[in-house]
Image 1 (cartoon, rainbow, N blue to C red):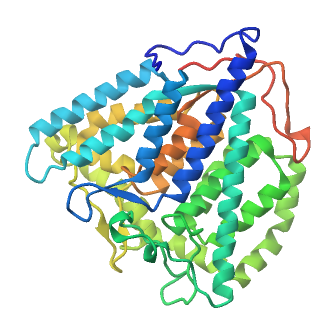
Image 2 (cartoon, one colour):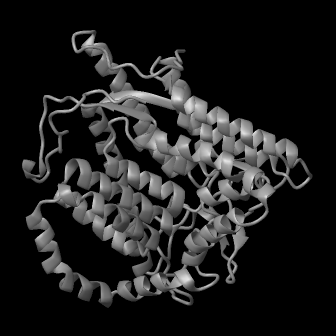
Image 3 (cartoon, rainbow, N blue to C red):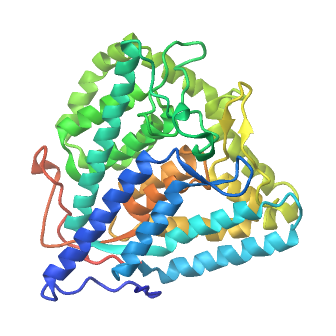
Length: 440
């Protein structure tokens, strides 16, 4: 087992056992692909710990730990020196606050889970650009399969069979709790929002598809994939997925041919008429109005976490610097009884204080951005993790971020060129020029 706590070195020279390097990177692609399939399919499964019903850990955490172990045994896993410093800083400050705030209400398990999940951001594997594209292409196939299951949800409803309910099939002790797995399009509607069978909520499948669309626009630009994934995103009725894509599109406009942008503008009236006919526009309009309405999904997911941070900044100075304590912001309920969780940035800031938050935020940002990963991909996974998924200690979202951006170092081959005019359906290769090696 090889773990190197050092700055990352460039990939070996091309003439240094190229077959061995390619085999190692093929192994990484295979591990990433298998892990992604497993965590997507089993995300509703948890491992019970202790006697309480709510004492559980997501199976995804154990799967990711196993994947990291396989990579370490192969000698492919590295530890970032900079991430290690930031992680130690966060752990020390959070541990100090745990000692100061020790009380029966302090959740040591919540702190330990956060430390374990944050530790994932220490690790990196190295891939060249071609193998990174292979991995992303596999992810796209997984996303297409998930989108197909979304349409399957609609098909079973249209023929009167309802929607597949894993909650009734998975034993209660093994069911990952506190998610609105099946919910109507609107209050009182006979139609349920699709969840692609395996996903925790409709919002989660919509975010998953949004990430896939960004990857497609950034690296592949295959029209058939974009059309299928775009239709799935619209059919999901998931507002957070649409918002994720909308907030990422500005970083992608330079990669889209102007002719396609112009064609899209001309097609907007037709798209609007079609969306109106299926009730999508009214759904979007109602979701936009949620931000200022107390107790709505939009208000709980976006407005209330920001308010909590502002309150902490201008409240008690002790709470500002050492936090209110782990577990002081438990899951809440809306006025309609739906569960909601605090956004990660909000929960860390309020529970652990501004100092611990600074270390943690830098750990996340420096892991997710740079290292040869296209900015749009780093941005979309950062957006999904911090603001859209609504949960801090859910390993699944950290795994998305790690496998797509935070856990890879991508070395680009500067001798290859590319541009938007490369043709539809072709891989979009890295631009020529610039350093071929990314550093931590």
